[in-house]
Length: 214
Image 1 (cartoon, rainbow, N blue to C red):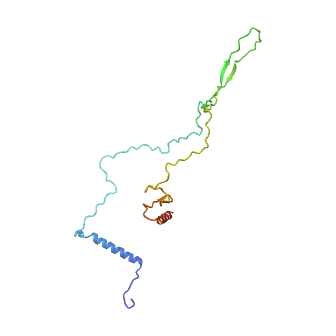
Image 2: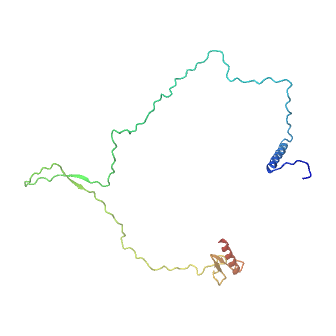
Image 3: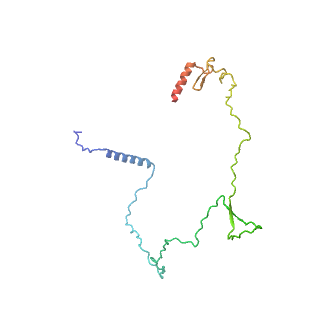
C-alpha cells in the first residue's frame, strides 16, 4: 500500500451498502429482461413538429340570445329565532294522586233506633244516625300437626353385614392379602401372577412414578 501511487478512497459501511444494493438491482433487471425485445429508440424528426394545441381557459361565446337566470331573492339574516319558554306549561286540572287500597277497611253500617216502648221516654233530638265500625274477621293461623305422637328416635346402630368373606383380586380371583402375595400402594394393587416383576421392584417403580408426578 505504501509503494503504490494509486489514490485510494475511504470505504465505509454506507458505501458498501449502496454498492451492494445497486449490484442486486442490476442483477434483477438483467434476469427480468431475458428474452424481452425492447423497441428501438424513437428517431428524431428531420422537420420541426407543429406547436402543441393549447386549450382555451374559457368557452367561446355562442351566437344567439343569452339565457337569463332568475335567481330567488336572498333572505339571509331574516329568519326568526324561536325561543323555548322557561316556565313549564300549567295543567288546567292537577293530576290526582292514586291512593293504594288497604287490605282491610272498616265498613260503616247504619243502626236504626229501637221502637218506642209504652213508658214515656224523653225525646232527644238525634241530628245524625249512629255509626258502628265493624272490623272484618281475620282468619287465625292453622297449624298442621300429625294425628298421633311422633315416632321415637332409635339410638341403636344398624349392624353391617358383609356380602363377601374376603376381598378378591380382579385379575386372579384370589383373596387379596399377604398370604397370596398381594400388596397395595396408594390404591394400586400388586398381583404376583400378572405383574411379572418381584414385589420390591414393583414398589420401587410405583414410588418413582409418584415422585415424578409431584
